[in-house]
Length: 385
Image (cartoon, rainbow, N blue to C red):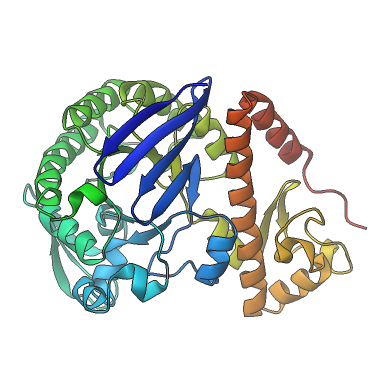
């Protein structure tokens, strides 16, 4: 049991317990406390798809993620600000983390042009032209009233030449300095956080260089980006093995855009505190349920007459109160309720997974917890009737 603390006016991060490299902590902010390890549901355009915000909260989420790129395009950051900010707009009074928009600019936008200043691009919606600089990214996140703001970075797909990885990493570091300067102009920055993003692709030396340069900037938290972009899991884990030890122990660590339950559990074991991923919501909308028995494809005909629920021991009504046969019917009929119920189930599973991890770390039993979860998934779904 260890306890380390970072305090910055209205923001406090405390590591309450450790088990090996796994950490149980709490990031306290004016709008609430984020219990870590934490999975953050993705609310791309101000909504966690197919869910009511009250449901998301009741499942145990302390924080959700909003997307700068999508919200700047529609309905617009200035409009959201006029309407009271994203918390009031979306009816989520708890902490919100916003990404910088950089990943979406690189992956979704048309005719983008990168320079030292920033990136100019055309909207994937209507072709309108925009410029996103480090300063504008932070300004948009402030207009959205984000509690945790991310630096603008350049995220490149892997594999890539080392020279290209290094160029993007060095540019991201220069943009981090500019983002920090812009963030510090916010009158209430002490009540918020700006995280830097470690880049460096699949190159260990570049990851270490990026982590140490960001650490020297003395930011309130640190993200690990540019992973889960095409590389095998073992490469991602190797990058975590070299990156996490370089980051301050008293500050939160966030692995961006990751991932499967196995990804989360193995990353927690390496010292990661926070995660986001569209996987549970996207899978739910496409007929897949995550359960303690593994993934269940409700499109499969073998569920057509199966009266059992997904998990009779779950606290989530979607998992406990509806038969697999009914869920199969909804999915095969393309009924909206099918995606709603499976998304509800999946987010419940992810939050339960995180609560189990927090409890296991507190009890110094994380390795056993991870092994038990993995064994359940390896056994797979219990046979259909």
